[in-house]
Image 1 (cartoon, rainbow, N blue to C red):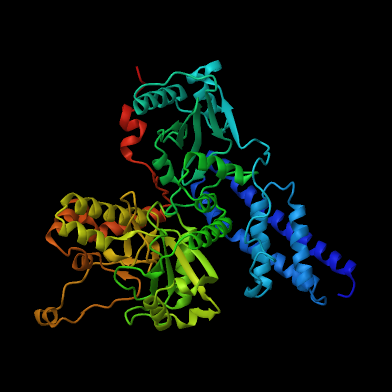
Image 2: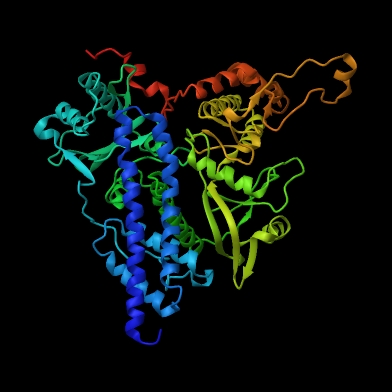
Length: 590
């Protein structure tokens, strides 16, 4: 381009195309999320699960469309560095009154990085740092509603919270459930503090829909104190609504937002307002995880990487090979001061593995699309990640060169990793059990074995068979929950064929050590699980007490039958003992 006016016009056109592409994306995203209310009202559980899966693809589709528009529009016009830098500045100007500026900046980055080489991935061209503030963006409707018990009374105010969601189903007995809520609050607080002049209940305007529940999230403000709460609203067998419990511990509310669960559907005009409110309830929860759990995974990735770079600037330890048994498919490393692990697919798999690289990537994508029921770790997937080479231990560098030479590139002071998965770090279950047995802590072994079996059961109900059930493929979270995290052999339950081992034709065949029956890739023999799971007497005792039926083919066939019948099970991210029907016996309080 020869004259400045042409360059400026070109920059304006690029910026406008970017904004139009993002606005289309968020309009479709919000329409899908807002539709969760109707799906909840109509009890369309399978439709809701499908919507969660389909929504994940929206972002990549809009990025691809925008890239194609830019490439077709400017195929004959050279777009030089000055044009791109000016386009970014104009784009910032277009976001001044935008409701989702931080998401739009990330969209700009995604499109730019599809078009330009990695050497341009710095703040002159993309948003390495955010440029537009998300503070005090007004929303219609407001991000949260406020209720004032000093004027209306607690009972009326709490009931009004739920009435104002205008669900097209009646409540089974809202007065009864409000009594349960008040009793639970009194039991939790011990003594009710005196009411201050500013006493109010703040509730996020949209419920958080997931699986078969609608979660109402808010906090009570009284003086200088704040009291967070979450109330799950469910359908009764008769199709009426009821309040299932009230969650009052901030850490239990945090468990709702665990990355081992499916993403929420939430109708948000200003997502940063929702994240800010949630952070006031869960200050220890990273913004990246909150954005991800709201279905905004690309924004979660952006914020995660900013946090990682910030952490690297304020720490000095090195990336090392992760402790534990080496995997046959994935090589895993970690930064001890940072609570995540980094997983790369090996160039060559162990001889017992029959999958290829594309299959492994497909399995990891599948995990994002299913209801993880709190039992599968979500992953952040990155390409072309540049990390300071000096922060890698010599042992790790050597192992990377040996195991994944096709995925690494050294560029000046940086080590470039072409493809990596990042997950929350957990203690491998095999190491947890080993340490518990060595220290003689029978209750820890018992808890872990019970949790492991429960994880297998819940995954099965959610139509997931882990494939490789070895202890090392599961981890223990900081809340003591057992979670699965090795996905290269997962299958849908309905694709598997669960079989009994047929009796041998004769004694000689039985004693030969050779398999006397045919086995296809998707055949599963549950009675074989005992061989590699019951590795000690203590583990055997616990396993047979809680989960002996997992060795019986009938458990698995029954689970398959329920899935094929279209049964969508309830998965509660809180203890059964906290549900109102357990606490109060289902009757009306005196």
